[in-house]
Image 1 (cartoon, helix red, strand yellow):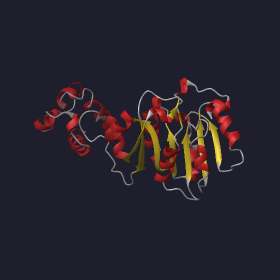
Image 2 (tube, rainbow, N blue to C red):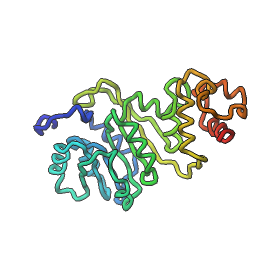
Image 3 (spheres, rainbow, N blue to C red):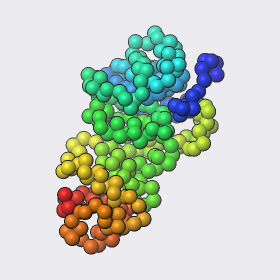
Length: 259
């Protein structure tokens, strides 16, 4: 379909178009869709996922596409379907207040790999608008998101797990895409947590978490030496731990003492 369209795939946008129908089917089956559901997709490409979403009995599908050629292609291809709106816009720059009227939203997207974490952090900032979703990410990124400790566990794991529940779905090999990426991919399901506990001075807390993981193999004390926190209040045994050995509640307990 990419070749027959006469349009070129552009490397600067990290375009790898999914070509395995069963993967699309599993994405759609995983989320709850009905005639009241609002869905948004990030990067439609030639509409391989867009089309099957439109076949569902949903209220609307909004697509955010950065490439004007593919945005025009999908608009033309599905012009008869009134459920579809295609925005020529970088998702990282959108005005999220435009989503307020039709919340909560379901997300279905094959994310551009070079901006996966910035997109997920935008989900977090506007999580009151999002109910659930399935996204395609690099295998390494998916594993990092769900890690509970040890190698690969860090700030992104803690931060994203605090606000969302995550579930690994199927691994997707490079040959499922055109052109094939150099890495394995993974579908990952997420659902926005309700009634998340407020963290006192939360912005500073997450900066504190980043510092704790500055050098993962160093102890908490060594990572935080430059920070001028009142270490004398913290148990010696805690300070000897590496951040990778600690869970979110451990960090919250420490934060309560030093903040």
